[in-house]
Length: 137
Ligand code: CMX
Image 1 (spheres, rainbow, N blue to C red):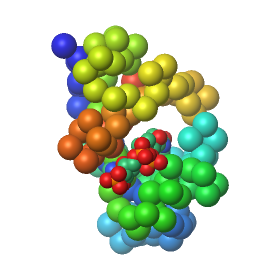
Image 2: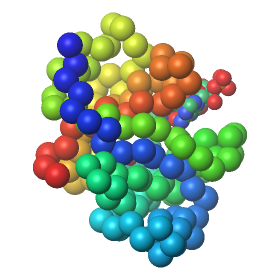
Image 3: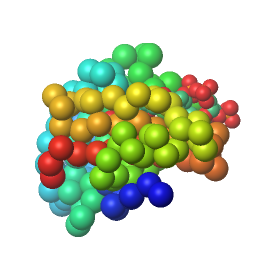
Image 4: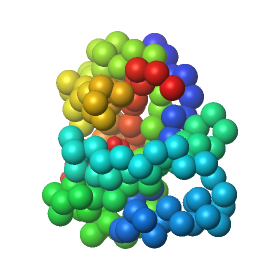
């Protein structure tokens, strides 16, 4: 059985990251943990801490980005739910014959900080599910 530890974050696709940050930081008063570019995924993200989890705002940095395509088709909104796993390679081994994975070989991104894959929304009742293992909190 895959060991899922918690909801790591909710990913929200936005057109303009700096504009969206104002709502979460200045109006809602959440703690902005970091803003970073993730070139492997062609996105720029802002992470806000909400209790034990995060809200991740994502802006596409290229028209080919999954985020830009999502916004083009559906507009801004919730893009994915990320589940923290303790061992992503074990999780992939366990799941690959049961669901459609976007990356059968998990990708390590953000200078090694996390390793990710996704369960395709067609295998998950219309929700894109990210699986993420973090090197450290
Ligand atoms: N949530 C729910 N459904 C989604 C979706 C999402 N985020 N993205 C696409 N879909 C739906 C589309 O609406 C479409 O449905 P219909 O056929 O009913 O119209 C279907 O999935 C299309 O699937 P597809 O043809 O396989 O591919 P897409 O080009 O739309 O890409 C996906 C979908 C999931 C493969 C692509 O978005 C992907 O590779 N995602 C993983 C990478 C990613 O999302 N990176 C950004 C985040 C990075 C980070 O968190 O750091």
